[in-house]
Length: 266
Image 1 (spheres, rainbow, N blue to C red):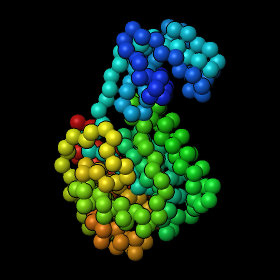
Image 2 (cartoon, rainbow, N blue to C red; image 1 turned 135 degrees about the horizontal axis):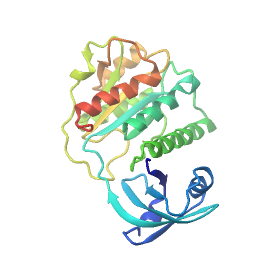
Image 3 (tube, rainbow, N blue to C red; image 1 turned 90 degrees about the vertical axis):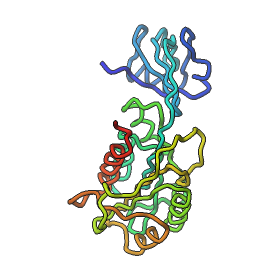
């Protein structure tokens, strides 16, 4: 049976060493004890979302408290090439579906994009609410797929801000791929950056030398003006495959191909 994974904050896991005991409190402990019904003697893993993975055995449980005897601690390095999903807002939860699947496939960061044809609109209080909802989706999907790293969810961008981010990313040596059904270049032929090591704590957003970002439009697609502006900033329009994919499917499909090309699934 797969070992259950739960999230703990970095402070809780900072003192974790083999033989030590750590205690998780609050909502995550409540989920472990009342929903997952973890009991003393069961194997468990705790992750901090930033690469630390603690393996251990449950020694005691309470409604809001979970105590774990640590048997092993590993620190997983960040990937050499970071994958970023720029996902246009979409109706019917298709954007969240894309974020969830992308997280399971290993995406490292997500950028919500208010595209011209987005039916869903984040404005006013919806901006923070939408971002928090996406953060909850990435956290749940990361735990389900047993990841030690939880993708970061960046601030909402409009097309102007996205174009500026693309220009910065390309200038830094990264690559930005715009998924478009009329592109002449297949995804397999896109030019990607080298695979130098990325130290933790690098720049946020898209402007890192080894970022590969995938831009996905909303239900109605990316407009010609958006494609032109992104291309002028240095993005590469690419074709994922012979069929037109939904906004919930296109990004994860592209990320799977890129993971294989970059050796992340090797």
